[in-house]
Image (cartoon, rainbow, N blue to C red; front, side, top):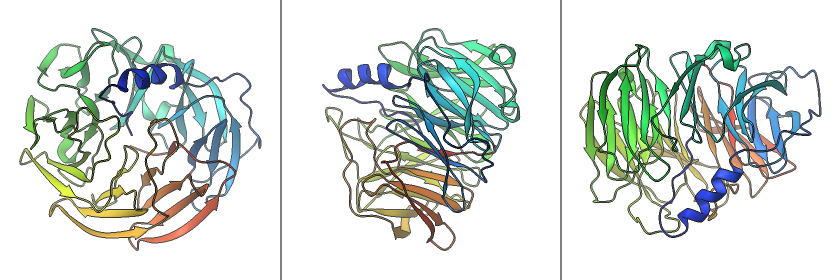
Length: 387
């Protein structure tokens, strides 16, 4: 998932909070239960630490004390995650249930993208991009990783394709408005600066890359960029979820540029093959932690009505759903806990911070297979994954 960009008068205050609260203090971090051997770990943060749970039973296997607001990012090796702290990206061995001593230093750790066996980190504070083999996440040192630096620091993102091409955003501390594609030698292949407020990235079928704009989305096909316009003058797509099983990307969709917090009730479907954008109405609003994709490419949206909605991306229709919790309302501050969705294979993991619970849902039957009560409200939600 990607940090939401905020617009309107309150944005400056929220942005300032992001810069100070995006990482947490690592001093005093401890592991409550050493020697863990966690199966298919699922990881969630809470105010004061990180919980590592068994992916099948949802039993808590490790409780790691960690101050601050901490973000979670899979590395793609099926064992490790990166925790954004005040020092940078710190490696978490989720199977062992403990933080390692490896930290990829970053002034303001931002997005982490895993694609085709390569993991790319973006430092918003310096514009430095760090890339390494996903399977080496537990052994690689910062000095051994490949690096590239964007022209100026900004809240950005990068992804390396199977061809070795590197895509990264263009911008500065004031604005981000484009994307550039570089060949393996660092030479420019293509760029587009027709993407105001660029945010978020995902990859669809046939390795089509999509990034969101405040007036649509950019699609990169390996050779150049195509702009797909929103239906509205301001139709912002900021967070997306793609699937290798579908040419259609799921994105959020907001239309009120001045809103302190818009609660949208439509999502965008960006067809990377036909280069078209379609909007789908939902019975409830959702947040930036609500989007996911199922094992067959189905689009998933966790609504504020407490239901996980299933959308057929080809037909553009809501086809099914499962009610998981009571109705809820998105808090004004994006760092505050709200229900979150993490999908791995045919299982959707859904947190309910109001009830201090975590659910596992079989996406084929839409049945809840496990529910775990927690001692604190879960916030970030992630888990180990493979490319």
